[in-house]
Structures are given as structure tokens and as C-alpha cells.
Amino acid sequence: MNQPNLTYINKLSNGDKDFSKKLIEVIKFEFPTEKTIYYNHMISKKYKDAAENVHKMKHKISILSYEKGYELASKHEDNLKKNNNKLEKEFEEVLNRISTFLTLI
Amino acid sequence: MNCIIIDDEATARTILNQLCSEITDLHVVGEFENVLQGIKFINKQYVDIILLDIHMADFTGFDFINALENGQSKFKLQRPPKVILTTSDKNFAIEAYEYDCVVDYLLKPILPLRFNKAIQKIKKNMHQASETSLVSNLIETSENQIFVNIDKRLIKINIPSIYLIEAKGDYINIKTEKNNYVVHSSLKKIKNKLPDALFFRVHRSYIVNINKILEIEDNTVLINKELIPVSRSSKSELIKRIDLL
Image 1 (cartoon, each protein chain N blue to C red):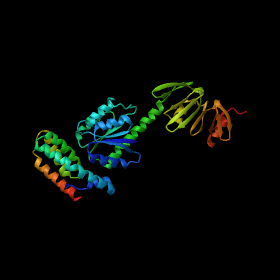
Image 2: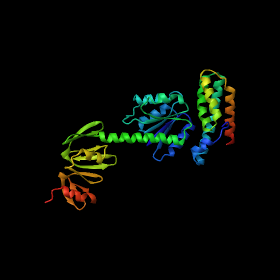
Image 3: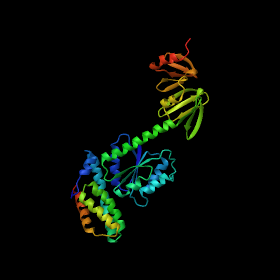
């Protein structure tokens, strides 16, 4: 899918609403910090460190069943390991979509 | 079975905890956000399974496995824990299976069915290991002696001196006139190692040496001052086995 959604979380929780709520709270807590650290590394052009942050965020992108975002994050991570930031803008769009989604759920 | 989770991401730990909670006999006894905390814990407490992330700051999952396999952990690893690697990276699969303790490699996000499969694999593995260990703890060397493995020492027992063997959970207590020996084994396994002419299973929890029986009364036998129950189904067979005037 080209949008974050709750498909995986619903499958995992199997109707356990308390668990879904708890997991979403943990993601809401962790994601902004990881995003900030990523942007700081990008500003200071520490691309290899930024690749580590993308790796962490990639897991959350997959938990939110955002397939297109995950594909882009994987390519961006690989590029950053080679000091290449050509997907920076597109990845920023992915991060923005997730941030918006997290405010809505 | 108990397990610990080592992952620097709280989201991943929350998911793994949920997956573990769906398996009735699997208990999470610790959650750690780095390798050092994990090592500290297993130095104090034995765990059956370690759910281990690969990508972590400072020390990686592989650093942890190296410490575990090279015995850098103070914990005496008589039965090393089984490791399930959890990662978002496919590229480490080949390296992962080079380690003896690694049983499975799960790609994040982990699906419940795939997680269950990994746990089933460990259960099967542990069951097979336990069967092997039960047999190898008893070594029959001749008609009159048997060696038992206790705390990594092989101890010889003179078979005719055994008067009673009782089951104690996963262990058996072999009683002789001088000593008692507690061995990780089962009555079924030891029965196969002992001469049939001498030993008889009087109850699901007891094997007696027929020559040492002093009295049989109702559904009990007296043997070396101990009163041992005899099951109804075994009593008639026992009477046939003794020399009745």
C-alpha cells in the first residue's frame, strides 16, 4: 500500500485492543525521537549514521504496513551507506505521511 | 520454557512480548535494550531462549553470540540457550546459521505464524536433546555394575546393592544400602539397563530389588525399613516372581 495503515497491527493483536493501543503508543513515543536524530545526521551529512536511523525507522514503516514507504526506505538506507543522499526528499515525504498518520490514530 | 528479549527498539520488544504471550509455556523473564544488560542477566539466571536483535548500537547481536559461544559469559552453560535472531535485514542469514546456538532467523515485522514455527522448532530440538541425555546418564558396563552421570562425574554402582529406585519428576533416586544417587533419567530407561530377574516395577514410581524385599502385606512391600506401595496390576505378577513356599 502507498499509505500507512493498521493491517499488520490488527493481525498481530488478534482483537486485543489494549495491545494495539499499547503498541501504537510505543511507536508514537519512539518515532519522533528517531526522526529528529535522523534529520540531525542528515544536516551534518553523517550519512552512515543516518542509515542506521533509517534502519530503525524501516521497522516501524513495515509495522504500519506502508509497503511503498518500506521499499523507498530500504533503497535510501543502501544509498546512505554509500554516502548518497539522492532519495532524501522522497524519504522525507514518507516520514511526513507517517507523522500525519500517527496523529490520526 | 523461559526467554529473554534483547532489542534496542521498544516497539520491537513490545511486539515480541505479545508474540510470546500467545504461547502458553513460554515466559518472558527479562527485556533488555542492549547486549551488556543481556549478558549480565544470563550470568545470573539460566534461560532457554534468547530473542536477539542484530542491529544494535555499541555491541551487535553477533557480538553477544560470540560472547555466549566463547564462554565469556560467567554462566555455566551446560545447556546453552537457543537463539532466535530478529532483524529487518535479510543480508545476515548466512552468517547467522554459522553459529551453533542460532535456531532461526526472523525478519521483521514478525508474523505470529512464523514466530510459532520458530518456537516449535526449539521445542522439538530440546525434546530430542533431553531424550539423548536421559539415555546417556546411565551406562551399563557389566551384569553387576552400572555407571551413572551425576554432575559430570561417572559414578559406579554395584547393581545387587540397589534395593529401591524411585521416580522424582525428571529424576530418579537410586537407593543402595550405603548411598542414594539422584540421576536425571526415568524409571523406564533404568529398567532396561537392569537384570529382569532381580528388579521389578511394583508401582509407576517405584522399582524394587526382589531379593531385598522383607515383607509383602496387602498393597505394600517392606524393603530396608521403607514401606513401598504396590499397584493392584503389579501385585499378582510380583507374587509369581518371589519364591513362595
